[in-house]
Image (tube, rainbow, N blue to C red; front, side, top):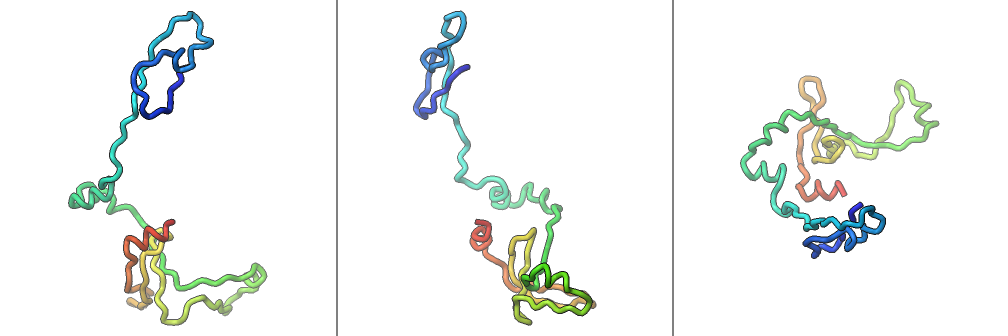
Length: 142
């Protein structure tokens, strides 16, 4: 077994005995091991999606067909199991939002913005009224 030092300044040639790995090796000959510092790509610059967006799209078109779950949340309520078991046709559950208050628009469970409920050809819809800034979206992740 060869031991490697964790000293970042270590670079050069080391024998197993110098690295502490020669004690128990049969044969008594010392083979040389080359130790070098690891080189890593700079992660401070724009990479991945940021770089693709900055370059005008490029491979971003590959992501345009990825399905996302859009959810509009009207409100929430907390109830006990006993209360839920008592629900039936005609039961009314009061939510934590006021009538006319903006609803949450979520993408894959993460808040994207706010909107108002509208009716389109007898179907409900949402008119997006506010989009969170990228800083606010990052803040909600942590």
